[in-house]
Length: 103
Image (tube, rainbow, N blue to C red):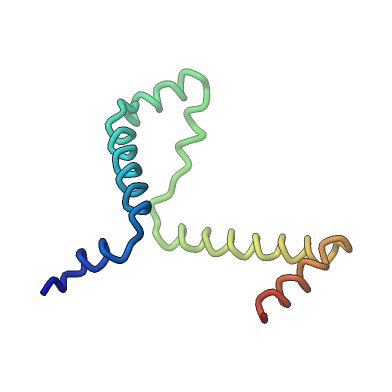
């Protein structure tokens, strides 16, 4: 009995998906072996161009990063809400999405 998860996955997937997965894996290997510049080299190039302080604005505080993510999410909801409900040409989007989700 072949009851392994991998065997079930391989036998149930269509063959073309396996081919695409193999191509994606090969492309990923080629991309990951490219010679990318190190972080120090990039920082030196930025400082030479006068942009060294732009990248230096990082915070290691985990809670602050979560808070900034929540604020960004809330801001995107607010902007979307104002776009849809304050402009007459976008009000049909609300009706369209609500009807489409109920069908």
